[in-house]
Image 1: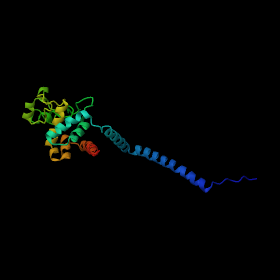
Image 2: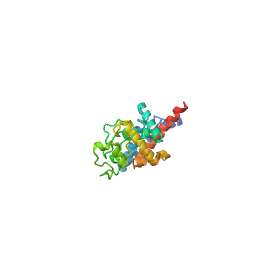
Image 3: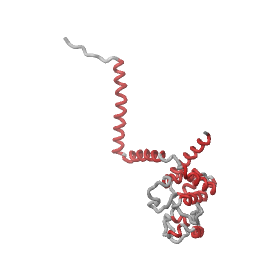
Image 4: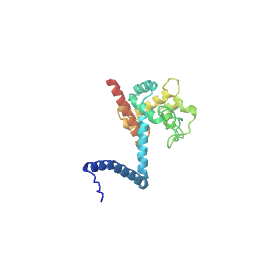
Length: 221
């Protein structure tokens, strides 16, 4: 006698289809990723970079409490938002936690000033990016800074303007941002003056808006 072939019921067929759909989607997605990585590796790199960027941003949302009074004092002096100073500090040196306070291009200190910007671009030898060849004693000399139109400020009242002193650096950044438009509400323009990079402007604005939002939320509690 011939054995009767078992036929799947309609319910079983639907269940089988339901199980196969997720598997098919996963296989299709993996195939697409592999194909894209072979044909367009820059897309994969960009996606990974975006994920790392988001992770990096969310890792710096807490402003160190000990810095807030300095931000507020400098912001009051130069009539700019203190959260803007916090945003610059976060982007420039991760709130002064970087291993070195000197960038590859020669920017120095907590807020990463180019020496010629800090001391003044009329200082002899200041050109190009502004690293210059300025003796250490001139970099902090208030008379030299005043003579050459620099943005360095003595924030802690010790008679010198030192980019490696946190208060001096933050007050100097406030001075620069204020004169670049922040005191008139031109925040984006001021940020761009600080560093002529669209990516830099985007990053600082992101933190600035995040910190502003945090302050609004705290005020509503």
